[in-house]
Length: 225
Image (cartoon, rainbow, N blue to C red; front, side, top):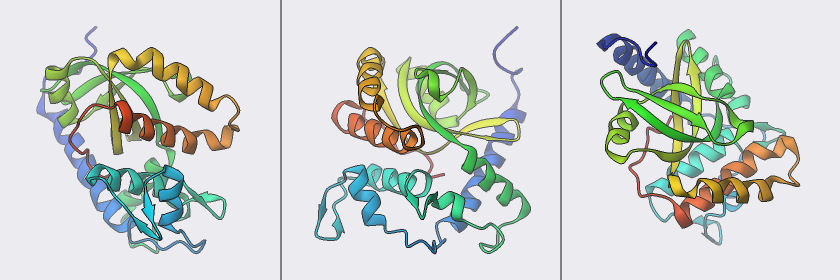
């Protein structure tokens, strides 16, 4: 049986609708003001982005995208992430946007090998490199499916969100050459060895951000949601 669906525009259109819905939800989410005093400079320091006094010194747009992703999806304020604090009703979200917000809350980031791609149906085969972050999945992304046919297999640290029967990326992603696989696995293992389980997603994001800044592949920005 073929890994991919039959060649049809239907899967691409469903992906486009889900992506547009995610953008609409995100445009409301970023207006959220947390009662637990979510100081973005704390997130920048945790992510190790340089600062001068209380001014964040971004190197490029990817730094800004990484900080936004980290601030909303990994940092905790008052014991919860901002994406968990956010109230869909008070933000004026539609029923579908609220469902997308719940999907974002359940999304998890991991290191994946980007394998065979079907750009006509915008589908990629992702295989988890870290056993604790997931398994092989069929993943929808127009940009990545087109790039994968040119770049071949690479590694990517990204957040996978499932909405209905569509698995797609959300937020920033960090890409690495495939030959870095063994090194990343070993350094990640050593870095996470003493980290408590509840802290691992946050610390894992910081680890792969720093690895990307030192060893990552040049890339275009992904969609912000």
